[in-house]
Image 1 (cartoon, rainbow, N blue to C red):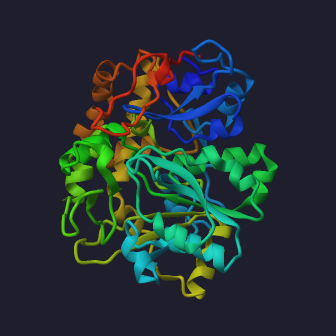
Image 2 (cartoon, rainbow, N blue to C red):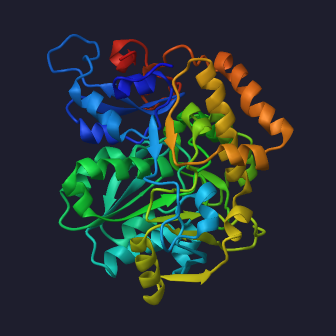
Image 3 (tube, helix red, strand yellow):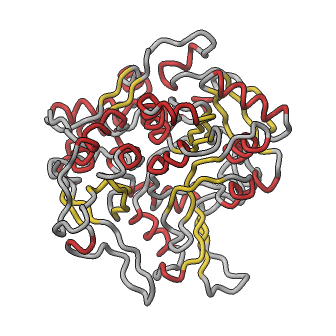
Length: 451
């Protein structure tokens, strides 16, 4: 089985999660770019004055492998620690407490993708715990269908960026902002992003000292920018240069996908239901590494937040399922409740699998996919103390088992998994209805990454 030597090998092998931790650890060698059909990806930095070609991978790109969630995810142990809910450990990772509820502020609850808990908890850390900032993603002001990493320092800034962004993001690329902050900070990201942060803090003592809380958002996979552009087209936005804003969820639970053009009249409505946007469009554009993900619920975070899908949606203004995975997470969630920032009710352990049955089956399917890929000699991530085989046997139907194995064999050919990815930096159109495709040639900062 092939083994990566640098993070560029990971990207070439289509195992990159797009977290950006390599750009943080090796900023002189690696930069993150958006690749239309793959997601956020690392490209080598070309030295000033060098020929118009990618620089050779250096020691930083190799060392960053130690913190790459694309090739490695592992817990220190597979056994529940004292204080954890033992019955959840094997399938859901460490869980110390479970609540259900919402942000006390109605504006945050309404703007959030479910109950606004992640935004409200992060805001409490700024005001109640006097933390220095919150590192998270938000829409780019100049290209609102793309994401950028930012450090918010006020609850108002957090509210401006509330809601899920079902598009590529690399929040770990600016962990330097946490390192240089005046005090502890909150990090908010997908499960793979938080896993990268956990590995990075072990090699960067100052980062470890400055992380006051990590919050993970449950994730069923990251669609590529191609998916967003398809969704925008369905929303009646064939020319993304006229886009003023795009929202994937929120304004109710689960909310609708919404777009607005700069010249839309006030009463213009461009909307798709959650089933139409995610179910019909976006989920089909998930990056390949998401099909091999065993951690959809943020097992390496202090706190993880997701949807309680066992509840009926529609008229509900929003509910969040909240997991505290560490003692720090328990303390800060309880403090936020005591301060009036969160309205939460403790729930029993069975609520978690009832709320996320699809994610449980997805974890089981990964076992079949990995075994098939390894038998075919392809690169796969190393997943340690994240049990999957038992879920495959007990929770997947015969048809689902066959899909995870025989279906993976078909995907090897259909997704060209034996071929290295060709990564071209996407250049968004800037006016005049230019087509949303990557610019050709070296001017587009293209590179076939083979390590």
